[in-house]
Length: 298
Image (cartoon, rainbow, N blue to C red; front, side):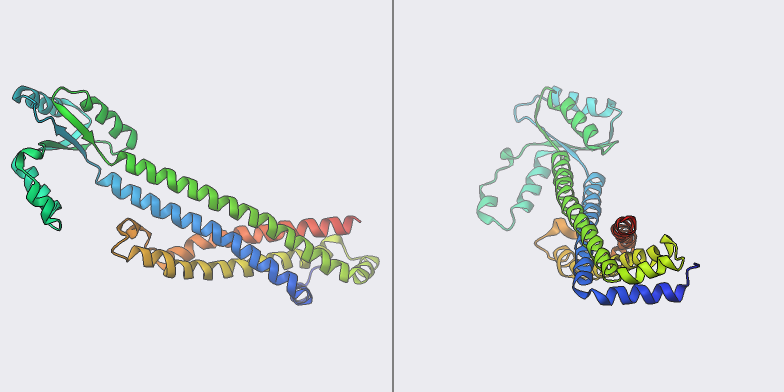
């Protein structure tokens, strides 16, 4: 028997309506799984943008020891000039460092009054050639051992901590998405099995008059994919809502400056969601495919 598109569409629609409770449960579960995966992707993109911003602005600060001699300071400067990993550097003398400190504590007049020029160390501000974390740490270690150096700092640890936190969060969210996906497959499996069981007499008659397994199978597989498609569309709506309520609210809050990179355009959310919807339809096809295969084999 050849497949007729009108027949397939009619059968798929009827099957979805016959089991509304299981259908709704399957759609919601797929939506939850895809929403969790979408959140993980958005968080990962935001953290990548944040880490990229840190990398673009990465700077190594070499604080000079208060008791460093002029020869030691000159030696540090010479080492910076000779090091091929140093793109540029500048020297911040005591007056400039004191002015920076006063500006930093301008909202805390008590602290500003206690500051004295001799309390603020001079420093070298270094721009590395390679902003990669490992390269920055290697450059830091070189100058940390240099005579006359009090301390060497950079944002490398902060970048690494952000990336590690993002990785852990993503793993957790992806795990929850995987569990939800398995649950969705099982629900779609049970929905299709229930639909086929309710129509078992009709299926037996179809087989008696020459219907092939594929003729019987396709409407049910498309039913599973339709459930997943509905779940995917619901997931897009949920992600757009989360983007407005959570991500964009945090990004535009002056108290959460780190979240500025999480201000996603709605078009970005939709474009990232399209592959997830396709994955959801594959999940639906897998669940319904197993159900139909086992039923027809019995």
